[in-house]
Image (tube, rainbow, N blue to C red):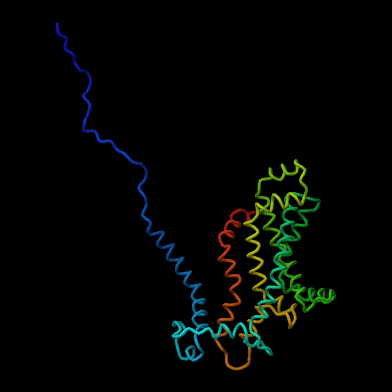
Length: 311
């Protein structure tokens, strides 16, 4: 007897399409109207701020006849470095014609110790105000921050009297001391906010292990604080290097920083104005802050994002 097998149920569909690949929203095009508007505005303002630098550079490489009879925006027909050499070595800054070189070294002697001392003291202040609170610490911090809002011009005459009594008026030591003092309020605020954003468990664990004030500061806090140190470095170097007021008042005629020398070159009344020398001197004076910004720009952004401006 033969048995017949019957098939039940629907027959399999051999024509079903199997979809493969990732699923999700369609990628947006890169050039959207919003991005075009944003990048156009950014490019416009970038060119707007770079245009004066372009004029300074092209003018510094021209000769005076080409500047007088040519177009200020045109590229130099023949590049000349004579203006740069003269600005550095022999441009007249009043009665002397030694260029910017003496002012550059004076600015270096002022900037390096002022920056190092002010950053170190401010870092210790911020560290102590966060992790080693003492009686009246908040009042001390409030008074310190209040000092950063007082205009420098208000304190000029008292500072002249103080530095005179200390016997350092008209010296580099007076300028270094003043820059160190005036840099501490804002730097203390930056370091205090940054240290407050670090995990407190690390500090407490170090205290439990028997670490003291300075060991915690040097072995735990400092290695974690590179971004905020870069922020403080950029702020101090830029502020001290570009300073004119304290340099012209406290440095004395023999120790003028680079910014004061630049002013004397540009405003010199001897002979006809040499615009190429003036432009070259201006670029030379601003090179140090520009180089620091380009080298440490990413760390500066990291420091600000990590707590430099947080309350």
